[in-house]
Amino acid sequence: MNEFDTVQIVALLGWLVLAVGALASYKFEWKEGLRLAFIWAVIFATVYLVFSIVR
Image (tube, rainbow, N blue to C red; front, side, top):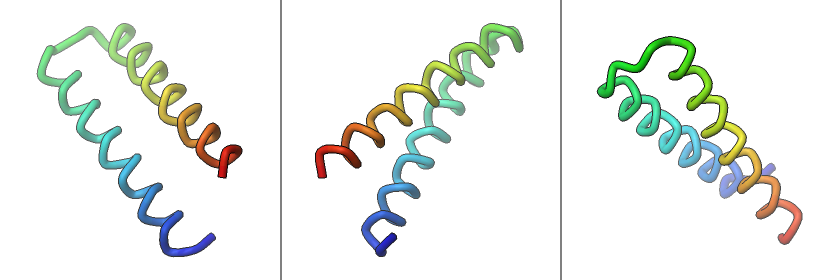
């Protein structure tokens, strides 16, 4: 892992924090919020894996 991988992980975590903040502003119920958070986590993990494989 080099410094660019670290920057990419930090950027992805930053986007995840923004998504969670946006969800919190809608005041969803816990069940729906966790489901949406899981969906976002799967999306980010899939994008990360695709870029890892392509590179």
